[in-house]
Every structure is written in C-alpha cells, then in structure tokens.
Image 1 (cartoon, protein in one colour):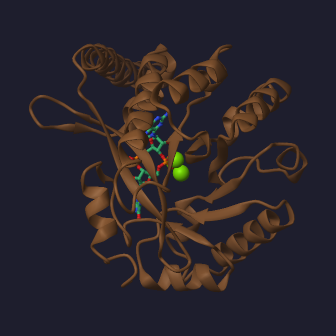
Image 2: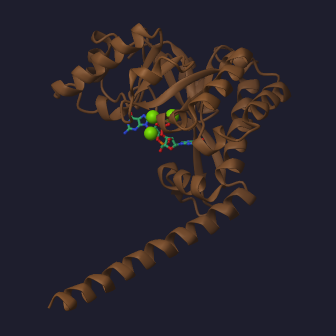
Image 3: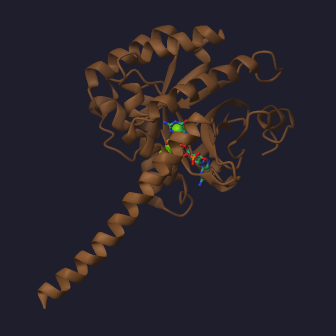
Length: 282
Ligand code: C2E
Ligand code: MG
Ligand code: MG
Ligand code: MG
C-alpha cells in the first residue's frame, strides 16, 4: 500500500515538475525573444514627502507582449536572474532610466526629481558594475545625485566587503542607495550600520494592515527609530489609503509611495500627474 501511494505520489510529482519545468523553459525562450525585440517599457511610480510634494519616482520594468498581455516582473525577474538574462535587462533599465532623467531635465517641475532603479544581485556583483553606472551617467549627462539604486538585503549580505567598496565608489560619484523591502530579510543592526545607505524602504507587507495590526505598527515604529539612529531616511511602500498614510506620518515616516499617490505609469504620464495638483490635494 505504501508502494502504491508512493507510485501515485511520484506520478503526481513528475507531472507537476514536468509542467513547471517546461513552463519555465517556455518563459525563458519568450524572455530571450522579448529582449531581442525590445518588448520592455519602464513605468514610473511617484514618491512624495510628508507634504505630498513629489521627490522622485521608482522605475519599474514592464514586459508588454505583442498581443498586449503583460508578464509580472515578480515572475520574470527571478527567472532572468537565474538565467543571466538580468544582465542585459538590467543594463537596459539603467540606460532607459538615465535617458528619461536626461529628458526630464528640460521639463518644468521634473528637473529636480530623482529616479530610483532596482538593481538585482547578479547585476550589482558584476566586476564592472560601477564602471557601467559611471559610463551611462556620463553618456546621458545626468547628475549622479538624481540616481538612486535600490538594493535588497540579499544583495548586500553577499560579499559584504566588496559590496561596501562598490557602494562607496558609486557614492563618491553622488549616486544614492535605498534598501528595498526592508524588514523582510535579516535586517541586523550589525551590518546595517556598516553599509553606506541613504534610505530604508519599509516593505509593503507592514503597511497593508497597519491600521488594524498592532504588531505591524510596532515594527514600523522600530524601523523608523532604527533609521533615525543610523541617519537614514525612510520611505513606506504600498501606501494605498489615507488612513495608512496618516498613521505612517504619526509614526514618523517622512516619505511615501503607493497607489494612493499614483500607480506605476508610462513616463509621459508622470509630469501630467505632478502638474495636475492631484498630489498636494491628497
Ligand atoms: P519592488 O521594487 O519592491 O517594487 C514595488 C512593487 O510594489 C511594484 O511591483 C509596484 O508596482 C508595487 N506597488 C506599488 N505601490 C503599490 C500599492 O500601493 N499597493 C500594491 N499592492 N502594490 C504596489 P512590480 O512593478 O510588479 O514589481 C515587482 C518587483 O519586481 C519589484 O519590487 C522589484 O523587486 C522587481 N522589479 C521591478 N522592476 C525591476 C527592474 O527594473 N529591475 C529589477 N532588478 N527588478 C525589478
Ligand atoms: Mg524597488
Ligand atoms: Mg520593495
Ligand atoms: Mg518587492
């Protein structure tokens, strides 16, 4: 009987394994084709200060297939990291964000806004990453102070000494760093204090139920206190409601990002949002 169950279990296991392997292989092929045929677009999501004045925007990649379908970055970015395609994709994101920064230099209300770019572990740990960033900034004539790189804890814990050295080299240029998804990883003060960071991004999982969950409030309060003692600024991700925003403000949060202010949008829509007066009315 055990054997029977084992066989059934095995057959089930085989089938679902097989399905997910071929699905991945299929997606990887599609991703390669998408890179060749440039099916990507960068969207931008506004970030605001406590007065709801725009500070900048986070660049978020979108894969829009020829049939109009979209594949979530949460699905294809991890795959691109495993396959190494993230290197080409990451380089494209950086270029595209710098070209956009350049274009916004001549637009009223846009020229002082920073752009935050997500950088994956594999991308960051390339030996010539600093040089890539330096060269793209120079090529587009962008003020490095307007570029912020978002890293996750996974990136930072890998090879701390080299990571710190790369971050320092980029910071000397003026580039700034945010620690993304903060609170979801290991987050020890021990390493946090050694990293040349500028900002912590409170993960949206702590913001979602903030109004009703005392534990989340305690966590957010702790993160903000921690940031303050390390001289970092804090931005909350995933702010969707006035209630969350008000509570975050009471807890001492200085900046916000989330659907309440604007969803990620195509680049031309961002200046429209900013000039519309919508943000300061929230
Ligand atoms: P992330 O960097 O933490 O980005 C925040 C995610 O939260 C984005 O999802 C954004 O659309 C979503 N979001 C923003 N405001 C709200 C809100 O109010 N409510 C909710 N429910 N969600 C909100 P998205 O664009 O699907 O990206 C998912 C993840 O994919 C990103 O998380 C980031 O880790 C990765 N990613 C996106 N673009 C890039 C990229 O260009 N390069 C790399 N390496 N990773 C990227
Ligand atoms: Mg991010
Ligand atoms: Mg995040
Ligand atoms: Mg995330």
